[in-house]
Length: 545
Image 1 (spheres, rainbow, N blue to C red):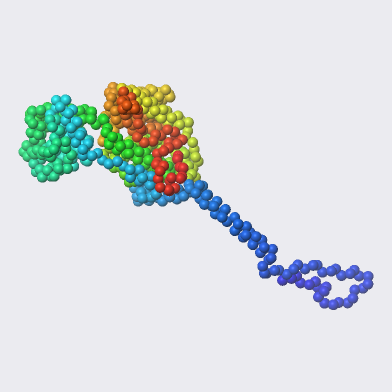
Image 2 (cartoon, rainbow, N blue to C red; image 1 turned 120 degrees about the vertical axis):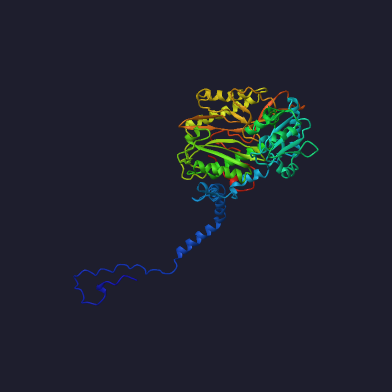
């Protein structure tokens, strides 16, 4: 629509006098609006499209590269959020999908688990025990079902029989290494079925001795060992059973745990393989939960511990799992307190201590890791990325140095258990955390095998030497400052002989650590997860607290 014409030109009027000024010419009018396509705009658009077409392959390549290298962390978060989600009705308010890809590294490790101890090895154990019994002048070894001794000698659950007020006893004779069982008479049929599955060093099936309800198991035991004799009784035997054996005419009780511990302290290659695997997967489970699952602010101590247990019992393939998760000042108590475990991972940073383990075919794992959660987590969920305070770093590095010192001491031929403990304690003292048990409040370590805590014990006052090779124990120094913090690093190690080229060892020893060590507070889980795995985000994402 154009502008209207001036009124002066709208109609003719009388002629202006000659002296009047000439009329003002009309203002130039703008062109009418163009409602059709503009030629210049069309040309510009065509040029832009042509340029985009030329660079489209490059843009696509850059987008893919960005998704692959830069966006992996985002994809990791998406995957992780699918592995764990909140649900107030679920245990600890969480639901975890153990089939999620995030747990693939644990499944890969579990697939390589070694087999249980063979029947042949159990038979060899019975023969070695019989030889030890003969040397000690004992006629037999006696244990109750389900005990570690019974599991060591016959495998499985150590005779699948629940202890009750009616004693059932497993017997190993010194004379011929033959097995026998003592059971109530009304359980004879069940016992006959049971003993056919037991491994035995004797060519004959284990004998079954019965006792009636108006008699005692101890008279039947005396018959099983051949009358008056000394019997070595396992240390786990219940007090009333021990008293019954001691009170049976002709039977004399000798302490049996020390005799059997001589054998159990030395671990066979099959035992070492089981212990190593159980501890490797325990370390991987802690690392995975710390760096890929419970790795952003808000998780509580109870939730972190529960997630570790779920990972251990599920994809990691362990049984009898357990955990202790402690944050900040709560970690000053090595096993925690009954305070509700409600502390949370904080954006301001949190010191986290997790002690966890489980069993593989009965053989135990026991691992402690302490790390600094920097508040940012994997993927930086709005956190601050707070570095560990100097006090935390100093305590952590002191504990690590103490652990190294203890391992070096254990490698010295003839080293005593107390000297290994003392080596770690000297480092703690030298770093101004006090002497004795002031800040390092517990022993250095304990033996481990079918039991989590067994001989030998690395503690002051234990002068026993690490004579036998293939001894396994924990090395777990700590620094605990009440109301402030607690740091502990724990690994299971094996002291083994070092052979020269000619096969001789000449007393040389070395300490072998089961699985990766935690060597730096800045990268506490280095090498804890398998590197060789099928392609997935967890292989590519670098995500450590």
